[in-house]
Image (tube, rainbow, N blue to C red):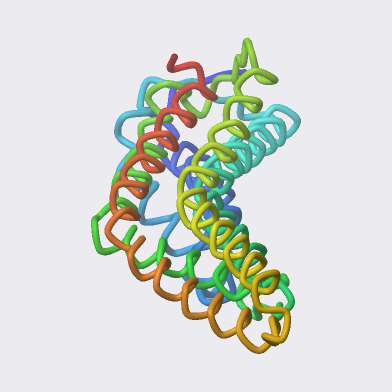
Length: 255
Protein backbone atom coordinates (compact mmCIF):
# COMPACT_ATOMS: atom_id res chain seq x y z
CA UNK A 1 0.00 0.00 0.00
CA UNK A 2 1.28 3.49 -0.87
CA UNK A 3 0.23 6.82 0.56
CA UNK A 4 1.33 10.37 -0.09
CA UNK A 5 3.72 12.03 2.30
CA UNK A 6 1.14 14.66 3.08
CA UNK A 7 -0.27 12.16 5.56
CA UNK A 8 3.09 10.81 6.73
CA UNK A 9 5.58 13.73 6.73
CA UNK A 10 7.69 12.15 9.48
CA UNK A 11 8.47 9.16 7.25
CA UNK A 12 9.76 11.37 4.45
CA UNK A 13 11.78 13.38 6.93
CA UNK A 14 13.50 10.28 8.34
CA UNK A 15 14.23 8.81 4.90
CA UNK A 16 15.80 12.11 3.82
CA UNK A 17 17.96 12.16 6.94
CA UNK A 18 19.15 8.62 6.18
CA UNK A 19 20.51 9.68 2.77
CA UNK A 20 22.17 12.75 4.28
CA UNK A 21 23.83 10.92 7.17
CA UNK A 22 25.16 8.26 4.75
CA UNK A 23 26.72 11.08 2.74
CA UNK A 24 28.24 12.66 5.87
CA UNK A 25 29.78 9.34 6.91
CA UNK A 26 31.76 9.16 3.66
CA UNK A 27 32.73 12.75 2.79
CA UNK A 28 35.71 14.35 4.56
CA UNK A 29 36.09 16.23 6.82
CA UNK A 30 32.68 15.14 8.17
CA UNK A 31 33.73 11.48 7.96
CA UNK A 32 36.74 11.92 10.23
CA UNK A 33 36.80 11.36 13.96
CA UNK A 34 37.04 15.12 14.43
CA UNK A 35 33.26 15.25 13.93
CA UNK A 36 31.45 13.09 16.54
CA UNK A 37 28.85 10.61 15.34
CA UNK A 38 26.11 12.36 17.29
CA UNK A 39 27.00 15.64 15.56
CA UNK A 40 26.61 13.94 12.17
CA UNK A 41 23.19 12.58 13.15
CA UNK A 42 22.00 15.96 14.44
CA UNK A 43 23.34 17.71 11.32
CA UNK A 44 21.55 15.24 9.05
CA UNK A 45 18.29 15.75 10.92
CA UNK A 46 18.66 19.51 10.62
CA UNK A 47 19.44 19.41 6.90
CA UNK A 48 16.52 17.05 6.29
CA UNK A 49 14.15 19.73 7.59
CA UNK A 50 15.02 21.92 4.61
CA UNK A 51 13.92 19.32 2.04
CA UNK A 52 10.95 17.72 3.83
CA UNK A 53 8.35 20.22 2.49
CA UNK A 54 9.46 19.58 -1.11
CA UNK A 55 8.67 15.86 -0.76
CA UNK A 56 5.04 16.28 0.28
CA UNK A 57 3.79 14.76 -2.99
CA UNK A 58 6.19 11.79 -3.06
CA UNK A 59 4.99 8.27 -2.39
CA UNK A 60 6.69 5.75 -0.13
CA UNK A 61 5.68 2.24 0.92
CA UNK A 62 4.33 1.73 4.43
CA UNK A 63 4.68 -2.05 4.66
CA UNK A 64 7.81 -3.35 6.36
CA UNK A 65 9.43 -4.92 3.30
CA UNK A 66 8.98 -1.89 1.08
CA UNK A 67 10.11 0.44 3.85
CA UNK A 68 13.31 -1.55 4.38
CA UNK A 69 14.01 -1.38 0.64
CA UNK A 70 13.54 2.40 0.76
CA UNK A 71 15.96 2.71 3.69
CA UNK A 72 18.60 0.60 1.94
CA UNK A 73 18.12 2.64 -1.24
CA UNK A 74 18.67 5.91 0.62
CA UNK A 75 21.79 4.55 2.33
CA UNK A 76 23.21 3.34 -0.99
CA UNK A 77 22.35 6.62 -2.72
CA UNK A 78 23.93 8.73 0.02
CA UNK A 79 27.04 6.55 0.13
CA UNK A 80 27.42 6.69 -3.67
CA UNK A 81 27.05 10.46 -3.68
CA UNK A 82 29.54 10.71 -0.84
CA UNK A 83 32.05 8.48 -2.63
CA UNK A 84 32.05 10.66 -5.74
CA UNK A 85 32.40 13.81 -3.63
CA UNK A 86 35.21 12.39 -1.47
CA UNK A 87 37.03 11.14 -4.59
CA UNK A 88 37.18 14.64 -6.02
CA UNK A 89 38.06 16.13 -2.64
CA UNK A 90 41.01 13.71 -2.37
CA UNK A 91 42.60 15.08 -5.55
CA UNK A 92 44.38 17.91 -3.70
CA UNK A 93 45.74 15.48 -1.08
CA UNK A 94 46.95 13.22 -3.91
CA UNK A 95 48.78 16.21 -5.40
CA UNK A 96 50.52 16.72 -2.07
CA UNK A 97 51.52 13.05 -2.02
CA UNK A 98 53.06 13.42 -5.49
CA UNK A 99 55.09 16.37 -4.24
CA UNK A 100 56.25 14.21 -1.32
CA UNK A 101 57.49 11.52 -3.70
CA UNK A 102 59.57 13.90 -5.83
CA UNK A 103 60.58 16.13 -2.92
CA UNK A 104 61.96 13.32 -0.78
CA UNK A 105 59.32 13.49 1.96
CA UNK A 106 57.60 10.23 1.05
CA UNK A 107 59.71 8.31 3.56
CA UNK A 108 58.34 10.41 6.43
CA UNK A 109 54.90 8.87 6.53
CA UNK A 110 52.77 9.07 9.64
CA UNK A 111 49.47 7.78 10.92
CA UNK A 112 46.58 10.22 10.75
CA UNK A 113 44.43 9.52 13.85
CA UNK A 114 41.49 11.50 12.47
CA UNK A 115 41.36 9.90 9.05
CA UNK A 116 42.50 6.51 10.37
CA UNK A 117 45.06 6.05 7.60
CA UNK A 118 48.72 6.62 6.80
CA UNK A 119 49.65 9.71 4.87
CA UNK A 120 52.71 11.64 3.80
CA UNK A 121 53.66 15.06 5.11
CA UNK A 122 52.40 17.24 2.28
CA UNK A 123 49.53 14.86 1.53
CA UNK A 124 48.10 15.56 4.98
CA UNK A 125 49.04 19.22 4.76
CA UNK A 126 47.28 19.71 1.42
CA UNK A 127 44.22 17.84 2.67
CA UNK A 128 43.77 20.13 5.66
CA UNK A 129 44.67 23.20 3.60
CA UNK A 130 41.97 22.24 1.11
CA UNK A 131 39.50 21.76 3.97
CA UNK A 132 40.35 25.19 5.38
CA UNK A 133 39.93 26.87 1.97
CA UNK A 134 36.69 24.97 1.39
CA UNK A 135 35.13 26.32 4.58
CA UNK A 136 36.67 29.78 4.25
CA UNK A 137 35.30 30.23 0.72
CA UNK A 138 31.86 28.82 1.55
CA UNK A 139 32.36 25.92 -0.83
CA UNK A 140 31.04 23.48 1.77
CA UNK A 141 27.68 25.26 1.61
CA UNK A 142 27.58 24.82 -2.16
CA UNK A 143 28.39 21.12 -1.91
CA UNK A 144 25.76 20.57 0.78
CA UNK A 145 23.32 22.54 -1.35
CA UNK A 146 24.12 20.22 -4.24
CA UNK A 147 23.35 17.26 -2.01
CA UNK A 148 20.00 18.75 -0.99
CA UNK A 149 19.11 19.41 -4.64
CA UNK A 150 19.39 15.70 -5.35
CA UNK A 151 16.09 15.29 -3.52
CA UNK A 152 14.42 17.32 -6.30
CA UNK A 153 15.97 15.05 -8.94
CA UNK A 154 15.50 11.81 -6.99
CA UNK A 155 12.78 11.96 -4.29
CA UNK A 156 12.91 9.46 -1.46
CA UNK A 157 10.13 7.32 -2.92
CA UNK A 158 11.87 6.63 -6.23
CA UNK A 159 14.62 4.25 -7.28
CA UNK A 160 17.76 5.73 -8.88
CA UNK A 161 18.08 5.16 -12.63
CA UNK A 162 21.78 5.40 -13.50
CA UNK A 163 22.14 4.88 -17.24
CA UNK A 164 25.94 5.11 -17.43
CA UNK A 165 27.29 4.37 -13.97
CA UNK A 166 30.57 2.97 -15.27
CA UNK A 167 31.15 6.02 -17.45
CA UNK A 168 30.36 8.36 -14.57
CA UNK A 169 32.81 6.56 -12.30
CA UNK A 170 35.45 6.63 -15.02
CA UNK A 171 34.99 10.37 -15.51
CA UNK A 172 35.26 10.91 -11.74
CA UNK A 173 38.54 8.98 -11.55
CA UNK A 174 39.79 10.87 -14.61
CA UNK A 175 39.01 14.22 -12.98
CA UNK A 176 40.72 13.01 -9.81
CA UNK A 177 43.92 12.18 -11.70
CA UNK A 178 43.84 15.31 -13.87
CA UNK A 179 43.35 17.70 -10.93
CA UNK A 180 46.07 16.00 -8.88
CA UNK A 181 48.57 16.12 -11.76
CA UNK A 182 47.72 19.70 -12.70
CA UNK A 183 48.30 20.89 -9.14
CA UNK A 184 51.54 18.96 -8.63
CA UNK A 185 53.05 19.01 -12.14
CA UNK A 186 54.72 22.48 -11.99
CA UNK A 187 56.38 21.61 -8.67
CA UNK A 188 57.37 18.16 -9.89
CA UNK A 189 58.94 19.65 -13.02
CA UNK A 190 61.03 22.13 -11.01
CA UNK A 191 62.13 19.42 -8.58
CA UNK A 192 63.12 17.17 -11.49
CA UNK A 193 65.19 19.95 -13.04
CA UNK A 194 66.85 20.60 -9.68
CA UNK A 195 67.69 16.89 -9.36
CA UNK A 196 69.16 16.96 -12.85
CA UNK A 197 71.25 20.03 -12.00
CA UNK A 198 72.58 18.45 -8.81
CA UNK A 199 73.44 15.28 -10.73
CA UNK A 200 75.41 17.29 -13.30
CA UNK A 201 77.14 19.12 -10.46
CA UNK A 202 78.42 15.84 -9.04
CA UNK A 203 79.82 15.00 -12.45
CA UNK A 204 81.62 18.34 -12.71
CA UNK A 205 82.87 18.23 -9.12
CA UNK A 206 83.14 14.56 -8.04
CA UNK A 207 84.70 15.56 -4.73
CA UNK A 208 81.42 17.30 -3.79
CA UNK A 209 79.35 15.19 -1.39
CA UNK A 210 76.07 14.97 -3.27
CA UNK A 211 74.04 13.77 -0.31
CA UNK A 212 75.07 16.68 1.91
CA UNK A 213 74.03 19.14 -0.81
CA UNK A 214 71.05 17.43 -2.38
CA UNK A 215 68.84 16.84 0.64
CA UNK A 216 68.94 20.40 2.09
CA UNK A 217 68.55 21.88 -1.39
CA UNK A 218 65.52 19.73 -2.24
CA UNK A 219 63.89 20.40 1.13
CA UNK A 220 64.30 24.15 0.69
CA UNK A 221 63.11 24.00 -2.92
CA UNK A 222 60.04 21.93 -1.98
CA UNK A 223 59.04 24.29 0.82
CA UNK A 224 59.46 27.30 -1.48
CA UNK A 225 57.39 25.75 -4.27
CA UNK A 226 54.60 24.67 -1.92
CA UNK A 227 54.43 28.22 -0.56
CA UNK A 228 54.24 29.66 -4.08
CA UNK A 229 51.41 27.26 -4.97
CA UNK A 230 49.03 28.56 -2.28
CA UNK A 231 47.32 31.19 -4.50
CA UNK A 232 46.51 28.53 -7.11
CA UNK A 233 44.64 26.33 -4.62
CA UNK A 234 41.72 28.77 -4.37
CA UNK A 235 40.94 28.20 -8.04
CA UNK A 236 41.35 24.45 -7.55
CA UNK A 237 38.82 24.48 -4.71
CA UNK A 238 36.26 26.22 -6.94
CA UNK A 239 36.79 23.66 -9.71
CA UNK A 240 36.50 20.72 -7.32
CA UNK A 241 33.26 22.09 -5.86
CA UNK A 242 31.77 22.56 -9.34
CA UNK A 243 32.78 19.05 -10.41
CA UNK A 244 31.43 17.53 -7.19
CA UNK A 245 28.03 19.18 -7.66
CA UNK A 246 27.89 18.08 -11.30
CA UNK A 247 28.85 14.50 -10.37
CA UNK A 248 26.12 14.25 -7.72
CA UNK A 249 23.51 15.61 -10.14
CA UNK A 250 24.59 13.15 -12.83
CA UNK A 251 24.39 10.21 -10.44
CA UNK A 252 20.74 10.86 -9.58
CA UNK A 253 19.77 11.48 -13.20
CA UNK A 254 20.17 15.23 -13.44
CA UNK A 255 22.34 15.20 -16.55
